[in-house]
Length: 198
Image 1 (cartoon, one colour):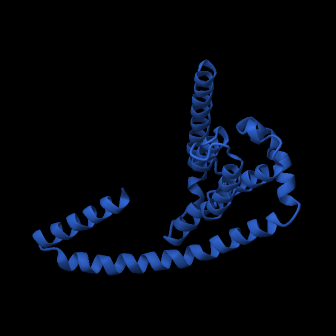
Image 2 (cartoon, rainbow, N blue to C red; image 1 turned 90 degrees about the vertical axis):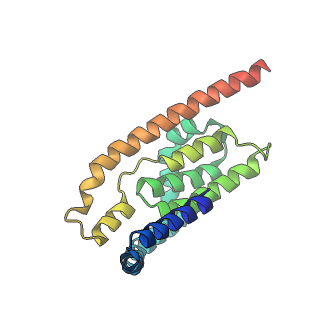
Image 3 (cartoon, one colour; image 1 turned 60 degrees about the vertical axis):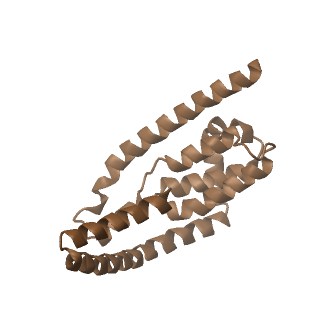
């Protein structure tokens, strides 16, 4: 879908600039925005490398085992199918920790690893399991205690108080996570009841 939307936006932008004589402004803005993008990428690189490195170190220590044990009641509630699968629980807990710390770039590969493991256990390869559906929602609408990436972006763009978004982020992510979990639990119950009737 995006491969259709973006070319349309680009064509409209160029057409508008040509029609209203703003081609010079468009040209200068293209170069300015590409320069800003490179600066932003370099500024974010340090933060991303730091937290990805910490997560890699943590995965090779007992810290993740302790975190998994701490998160086990939550994971058991959200993923009852995976109560006996400690490997997938560990992968999910690593993903959840990365998301809680606002590390979307670290959470993505960890999430893909957990999803791959769940697919290996999935008996119907063409359908999502209840755990996979819940994991997608948890990964997308995760509670963020420290929105590291957003703070780094705000800091790189010269915000006077880059951490001022923490409280609103808590409210937004908690509401999103609760709403997502409730919706998935309801839909899973409805689906399971329909299967039982059949």
